[in-house]
Length: 131
Image (cartoon, rainbow, N blue to C red):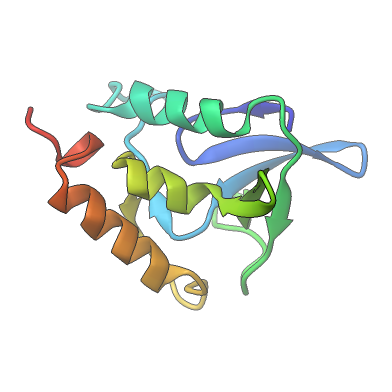
């Protein structure tokens, strides 16, 4: 991991070069978009992402598409979590900091993401909490 850009984008070192990676299947409030205000929960989503991935090795999993229209690599990002693995986007959705945003054909984990978003909404976490 090189650095966190915001809640749904990181820069990762791959084969000696920095690659901008956009998480597949979810979207977080904007916190660094040029000429745009910071959206509600944008800083919190970025901080949650930072807490999950900062200083850690990550595993990148490609679905179907390689890049998005902005040239960012589209990947599911995984971290080792004890004896298992955690899908970072799924954890952000469960915490209430991400909305599901799918773009076929990249829908491998869409059902899991939707369930996590529903749980966060039902429990009033993050974006779904009281204003």
